[in-house]
Length: 208
Image 1 (tube, rainbow, N blue to C red):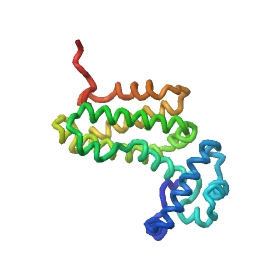
Image 2: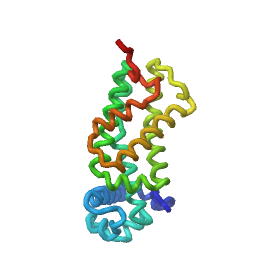
Image 3: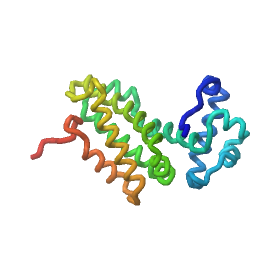
Image 4: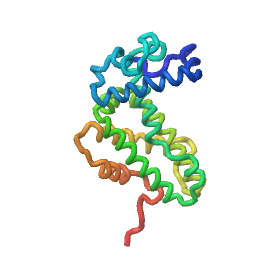
């Protein structure tokens, strides 16, 4: 099943401001609709009604509802997972930087909690889970690179193993939490952080 924007001329058209605005309007409509309608009940007609577009416009970008939902929530994860680049560049304390990423994890879980049903349904798809993993892995690699620049020894930093390991754990844990009935975001975030590897700054403070 296709889970991304079509290639060719449609992909090129995404660079046009009007096409980009339409695309963002549709993805916003998808996210809003999925706060009220289950994924398997959402229709192209309903998305078009909410976005104020014609079906032809929708199909110029996506093959079906699931493809649009995949884009909407993959991009939402990018927003939820992003740590300000200026903050990362200016960081001098690896423990403080790690704490900032931990806070962002809690923000991710809050976003997932707000649309738990949609996230749960989407993460059942191996293709969407893989896409989420790739995006989060890229984010984690940025953190790993920043830690290394601050003098933190990170095994597997250069070949991507460290980022892959950490991102995989976060995605798997987040998916499990999304499928459950636990509403305690802070506790869930703390439980995930407790699993970070030994190289993570501040992960294992000295015991008094």
